[in-house]
Image (tube, rainbow, N blue to C red; front, side, top):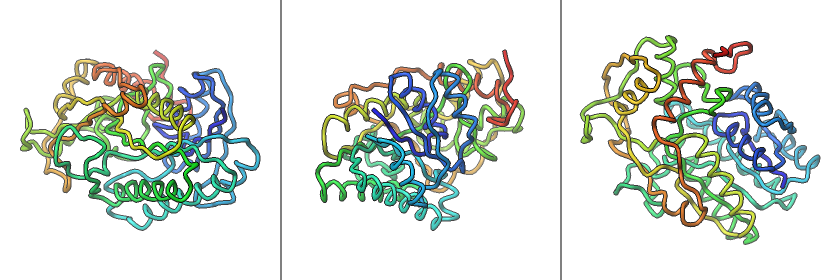
Length: 343
């Protein structure tokens, strides 16, 4: 099967490329490298020993999408491409709506034209907003609290409407919780631009000395130690969830949403402690004001994915921390050329 991966050079996309190639799929990557680096795809080839086609293009340019479909016999699409920072989306909402929603519409228009109707969509647990109950199941109300989250929620609605209009479509909406970790090789991992938005790369950059101190946003939440609790999932487990979703959409029609999480919650301080133990490095931190919109506790009920996809997260928090540190310590500057440190 030939699978197009939009945003395949990104953090989750590159790990999914590895899993697909190792499972025998043929892949094609389309990426504009806005939030990624072409070096990640070279590393994917290094890990798997397999080559694949790569197109540099933007989903807002329908002709660049169509070129990929004209030149290849694509059978399914895994759609990662899009802007992804919650805080940034509050500052520049129009850019998020244009990129994420219009890009997806243009992609679906081309897919429809070339009769490719199997789609795995990268959604987010942010679609739930402030949950009424924990753990969060897929039937919870969708009340996204940021422009980023609302783009994901709106795209889910668009894809449901698409299926209503044409029931040959088969679509999986994958709602991620908090991906961390890296490939065990240390060759690919999360490489954010500037100060990280997510906890683990923030911790690893403090550990490597790029940042002086970790800011922890609030310690007065109703949790065991006062810091926020989240469902952290290893990025390789998350990537494997995409393979299971791809199998699902290839064998049935319809639209289904699936939580991809572990079903366990860890506080910020528990993650810091686990990382310190894994890396044998002390992480200095300070408590700062909570961020607007942050909630106390958020973790998944992943039972639907286990039941319908045959998928379960397997890696524990210790492995997530060890793999994150291996990636950061060997690649202190991310994917900048010649940055890898052999150990």
